[in-house]
Length: 67
Image 1: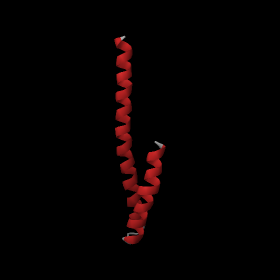
Image 2: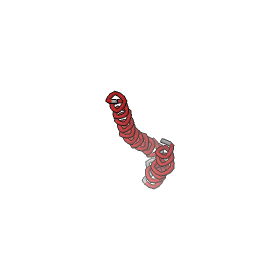
Image 3: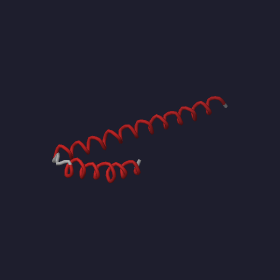
Image 4: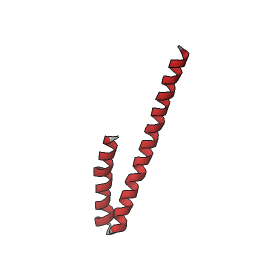
């Protein structure tokens, strides 16, 4: 999870703040929009990661009960 946080904070959020807030002259709205985009992308990433972990746990439990 640490890598997803680092990528989100330094790549998505900082670049987004620069582009939306400064280059497109959106000001504070662009900054908050960049934060929202970062959080949404992180939520999607963590959702799929959570589903994978649940599947791994389920497969592990099936292997325990089948023996």
